[in-house]
Amino acid sequence: MLYHKGSLLKVLGLAWSFLLFINSGQSQDVNIYERLESLSEGSTFPEGLLKTKTVVLYEVTPKPAMVSIRGNWKTIAEEIQPFLQKTGIDGIVHYYMEDIFSGTETYNRYLDHFDERDIKNALFVLEDKGTFKLIVTNLTDRQNLIKMGQPAWIREGTDLPAMLNDLYRSASNAGLARENRLILAVPEFGEMLTPLKARRNEFYDLNFSSETLAIPVFADTAEIKMAMANYPYKYDFIATGMPEKELRSKGFQYILYYVESTGKSVKEMLGYKTTETETDYISEVVRDGQLQVHSNNIRTPVYKFYIKHIYSGNVFLGKKWDSAPQWQNALDYYIANLRNELVKN
Image 1: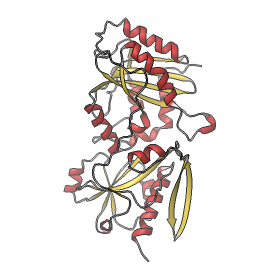
Image 2: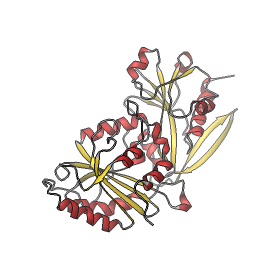
Image 3: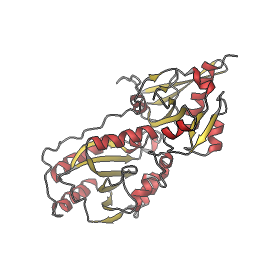
Image 4: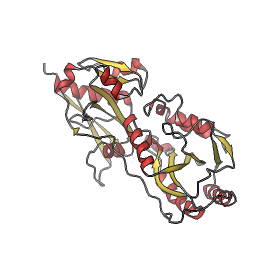
């Protein structure tokens, strides 16, 4: 059964509603799914679609028996890329949307990457229980990717090959100047970009004790306070997206950040070593001198928190891998491990 216009986006938006809190340096009043739902549907393609570069972004729901594990989007990408080559759409890189919106610093890094590669357009591929939605539009907003209500070519249905053929026919009949010639026949899956620009440290800074930690309001403050209950030093909430330069002028030296994606992606973004033979990652947390362990499949979306020294850019990841599928647990683990290391009774 087909979903009515916008319903697939609502389903996916509910599944990943935490993206509402991701910010790229200025306040985002709505999340990416609300922006996608607001698009003005029509037969119009971006004018330079067939002579400029396009990023392909995916959101795929997992199988019911594996609800905590990311859906298999790369198989879909392998089906889509040949049609893009045939159509003249230069889909130069494919990403899972969750990786793009995985944290404030990583999001900014991806925006820079899109600028570096001169990417002008996006093909959004959304799937829920066999129903697909294809959206072709311009990347018109440097901070939010797309603007509310901007025009887009949109198709929704259950027959992906038929929809891709429709994309080919529609683009061919649109009278667009075609200059893209050297288009790959197979998808290029983008590397996980790191938000780290300075030294990464698998320990904690002793100077935490003398400074007030800045915490962007990424969720309900009461919930954040609960997860921070064991933090032994001072902290204060700040507006999400406040520039780090302004934070320094207010006297803050450290800020709390996180990355949220699959365990494997998070490890790659934060510079941890990974191997092809691993199937699960073990998170460790020490409470009252007792080690607790938690196992998650490498494809399970998790959160990993870290503290950044604003002036130097150095980050402090802690001595243990302490991620968790729920942000509340991940923050609690990070704080518990920090306290265990820095507070000696």
